[in-house]
Image 1 (cartoon, rainbow, N blue to C red):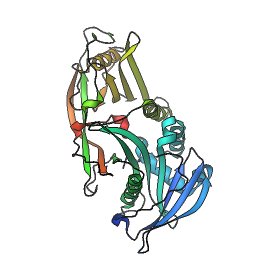
Image 2 (image 1 turned 120 degrees about the vertical axis):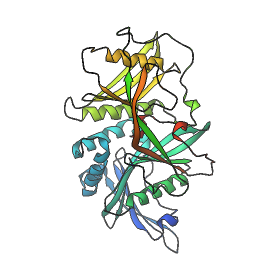
Image 3 (image 1 turned 90 degrees about the vertical axis):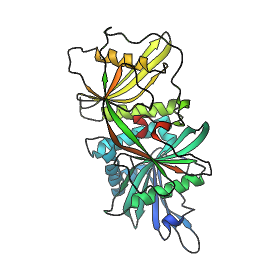
Image 4 (image 1 turned 180 degrees about the vertical axis):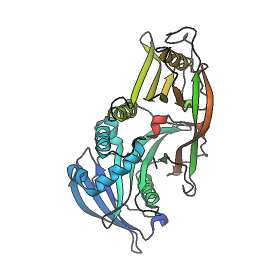
Length: 364
């Protein structure tokens, strides 16, 4: 994806800096939860910026309009490998907006000029921890430019980042599912990831669900940067994966979610997307810092069908976390990347991939 609260009735571009000088555009905020669309015009002139509300429309009108159709087609590029499916994408977005986190933190934007659609993106209000300090994060993804050889997507991203900085965000993250762009701008870092194919060793104890309890926990705090993944955020992430499976044709895609318990306490869990003979480990958690419980749970899942062909398993483990039952078969550079923009006076040392804890489904 190259992706805030429903309370804002009008979007103002009050601070149009040198990146937008001379630009005149309409910024459309489509807020499904409130049933309203607000359009504001901002013009950077020698007399200073102006912001003029143009219209307020019900969300039904947005869904029926030509701009909404094209925006949904743009979102469909990022939903799954199956390509654009407007009805599926509309249902997915509407369902996401019904979750507690989606109502508060997800919004769809479009940049238009003279009623021509130039770019669209989703914006997310995120919270995280950086070097032990809680930070507000503006996440942006699903960025699409609709004119060939024009960087309207970058213009929209810069505008959203400027607005987020004015609203008090400390960091801007721009998620991309294509090859990492070289136009992130001065002062921005780009975090690139590695995708791995893993092999899980066959267990000598077929069906054993877990391993002996050992002290300690895998703590996000050992990473310099991670999201504050509260219950609503986790529900949103898993719900999105379930929707992606449920809105596909039957048996095309599955989402599997498993938890191993010790007594009344969850010891470990895995969230796996299944497409054909390929598993993708979306995220996992383990109270054992070695990851041995996650490894044992993967062994138990494979042991359910011992005669079946072993699936190809893709994973993106955090640096330094590899269950002892797991070995890496191959590794390649991912097309996923994250631009990191500093939006406040908060000093940020450059972030590297090993400094960051981000799961695969955090980047949707």
